[in-house]
Length: 171
Image (cartoon, rainbow, N blue to C red; front, side):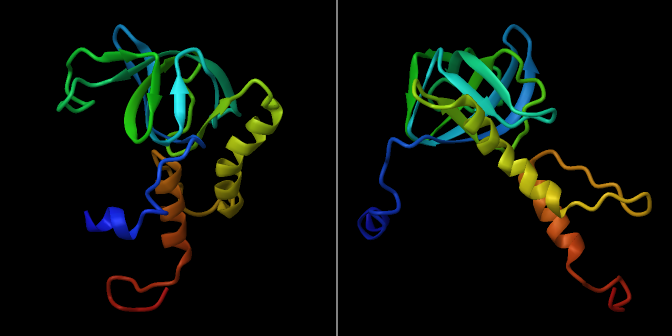
């Protein structure tokens, strides 16, 4: 196809894991799960992963990697396919312990044999730290809540930009 010829350097697969948490929810029979998008790289069952949490970084081991049946959506209740390893661009449901407070929109990092866990914890928490720097805490004002980091960042950006009210008067 034309895009694959013109954008070959941008759409090439590489082994560096790029994985983003989309949603965290409890599912009957599975416990708490994370829906993630694996863009590049590999992720395996029993890998130790680090993810940004609301109460600090979460370090846990993957119990299972699940995908929906072919040609089915994750939201549809069908039996999931179990995988030992996932590679490339795919949506995956990850079952692991202690992920109840994982933050949707944050990156998930796999801890390798020679990686320093403390460095990885700092790396995943940078997502949250960057957004929290933009937040001014004050007793007066508006309470802002969002379900993902991206949503929160977009909302804060919108609120900081001067605009007009309904009558066309500048704020």
